Image (cartoon, rainbow, N blue to C red; front, side, top):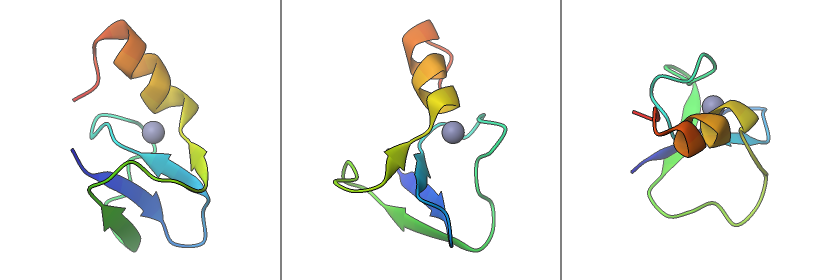
Length: 52
Ligand SMILES: [Zn+2]
């Protein structure tokens, strides 16, 4: 699973169906981010089982 963070933002996303999923100008890493914020929407999708 990839984590993406838009440059200049502190929020990490990991669901490609998140409405804020960065598609350009982002940083990407494959390990769980140790700093910054985790996206609320991505967390909600994961809980609901709809994270893609
Ligand atoms: Zn998100």
